[in-house]
Image 1 (tube, rainbow, N blue to C red):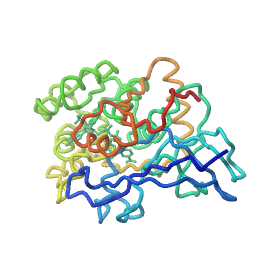
Image 2 (image 1 turned 60 degrees about the horizontal axis):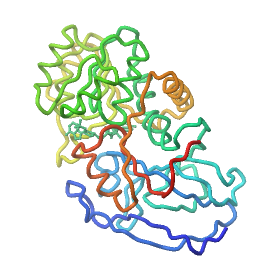
Image 3 (image 1 turned 180 degrees about the vertical axis):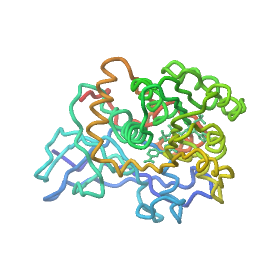
Amino acid sequence: MDFKDLINQQWTLNTRPDPDVIISNFTYNESPVRAPKKGEVLLKIHYLNLAPVMRMYMMADGGGYSTERILDIGDVIHGRGVAEVMASEHEHYNIGDFVQGQVGWQTYKLSRMTKQEKFRKMTPRKLPIYYGLSALGMTGYSAYCGFVSRGQPKKGDSVLVSGAAGGVGSLVIQIAKAMGCSRVIGIAGGQEKCAIVKRLGADAVIDYKTEKVEKRIEDLLPEGLDVYFDNVGGEILEASLMHLKKGARIVLCGAISEYARKEPFSLKNYGLVRQKGADLRGFFVYNHPHMYEEAETKIAHWIREGQLEALMDIEEGFKNVPQSLIGLYTGTNIGKRIVKVSEGPEINY
Ligand SMILES: NC(=O)c1ccc[n+]([C@@H]2O[C@H](COP(=O)([O-])OP(=O)(O)OC[C@H]3O[C@@H](n4cnc5c(N)ncnc54)[C@H](OP(=O)(O)O)[C@@H]3O)[C@@H](O)[C@H]2O)c1
């Protein structure tokens, strides 16, 4: 293979969000690609994942998130992707393998495939490779592992899901239905998103931008909720706590409404958790690697049976990656947002 014509495009950190993520936080760079040395592979990145947590990697204090991933100015922006092995001097990887893992915002990566990069070889399933960043990757694992292991749903449970038109939330809605939960209610922003969540199988949807969330939960779940899968935190979390059944489980998956606040949101009614003997349960997908295989197999089965749709929002072009991330915080995405960064037709694997 001739490497001399290959150019690696990268987005690096220029300045930190204060507090919003803006275009000038990023710098675009180009550099030549070299051949892999012994123990390395050369990866060509086809799709990049965009996730709300990326703002935290860019902040000096990690935004209250793990401190192990804080970026320095000039670092390539941290992020997962789906990539193809173009050349290999690594004993466990061959040309043509597809992997999903920590590639960063760039179009090629030379990697020693270290543990820290959390790569997984993709299982061939004759499905579009970009599913490796949605239903069959960390987004699907987050929805399945979070809901199953922390939500502990039972048949007949009443389930409330926020961020229901997003990547994780849209999957939780469908997984809850597939697992026999009887009343599944989504919360999303705007009529279009609410209609999509309903089409995915939710029994009802609350539009938090135009409706009184707490009153609507009361109307829709008069007996209260068994599981609340929280993607947004803040006022919506507070509203959900008003309607807990005894022994309810609240899965703290994400808190996007809080990520740009200077001060953390303080729950004023958490005493209700005590009164109802409920559990506020933290969830972090990287604590559940033992469940990834199960999650992927179950979700792939539901997709093939027509019981689950991987709701995707695919943008085109490496130059558009920063703008695509910014849109997550204003809700311009419907479903899992990823960016196609390589040229050419869609690849099934
Ligand atoms: N714990 C873990 O291991 C883990 C793993 C993956 C993801 N997460 C978390 O899970 C959540 C969902 O992630 P995702 O990748 O699937 O993103 P996503 O839901 O596809 O995209 C973000 C969505 O958040 C909503 N949003 C933005 N600002 C909001 C606000 N102020 N109040 C309410 N909703 C708001 C927007 O939808 P609307 O238009 O409906 O507002 C937007 O489309 C995030 O909080 C993320 O950090 C956690």
